[in-house]
Image (cartoon, chains in turn purple, green, cyan):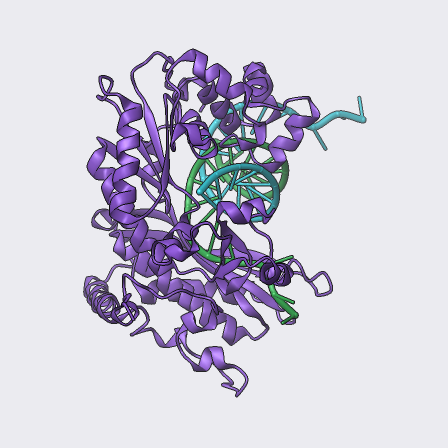
Length: 449
DNA sequence: TCTGGGGTCCTAGGACCC
DNA sequence: TCTGGGGTCCTAGGACCC
């Protein structure tokens, strides 16, 4: 790694990128089926109704910040008539998939960067009026899905992100902004606060502001070496991108290198078996995701944490990793490894608030290097067929129709511990204000009465 | 009572080897 | 008295993103 790693592209180079970004994504998803909420302040909460993760423009105008805990705002919300939803990932996943399909149909190469954003490589479109292309795409997406998007177009992904901010913020752009000349880039950088730059977070902003850097333009004027020595090569790449050099390649973002399933618990867990039940559940979900992308993994990690906000309680947290001799994706194998990790990790006397399972060292399932001493092909194939059957049943009948026993096991099913007794882990997550799954469940389909 | 979840990458420092 | 140095691998921790 070093300077040789960068691909240098000048601003006048015809390569352009677009970022297509859903406006206030989760809120907009809710509004597709509740048009009466247009113009109203609306927020969407995280799992367990913990904190605010999405806000409508009206909610932002009221000063509601992302990440604020809900229990502190509840009173406020009812006074200000803010409409509140629990998160409904079934709905958001399905609606954003429709948006992404339209983007893919209208751009030469598309990389989905997150649930609500996609980068397009517009190579080969240099003769197009790209601003008009963006305006047309936005109109098409709005018409067919009901989702408002903003589009930023520029010679690097970092500049495209900046353009999309302008596209959202100033109505004059009509949700599509293009930075295609040195002059536009110059102006855009000078009016752009440093903390809004893609890749510059809270810590970096603080350090930059203490040396007088306020705008993206100021940052660009720093000597390259200064950026490098103050931060790292990642920040240096951001610096290059703002100056118009294309150096964050789409290819290096494509393959998933780790798969994680983690949750906070609505109540603290103190008992080993309860924690193990949850960890086994996360392991099974992770293994399912792994199989879905036709991969295997060679490392299984588990992490646990107490509630960092409860300064009155003793704190403990950590992670442990189990390496597999032969890369695998069988639920049985992943669960066994995760259980081993947890056994080493668990300390009695702590109240656990969060845990998770991370699968890494991921490779394609068809390229498995089998270990001579550990490989039993009959056993391997049997597990594989079992998992296939379970995955199919869960796909057709709803997730967690069939689970491995360890995912539900509890030593002391007591009357006040509904979460384990009810079986499905899903039910142990609080989501009192969830909207219907309009597009994925027959019983929730919208009807006129 | 109540504070998200799923990812990425880099760096520093220790262990170990020759 | 005087106690190498460079390379590699691994892990924990910390930054960033949405």
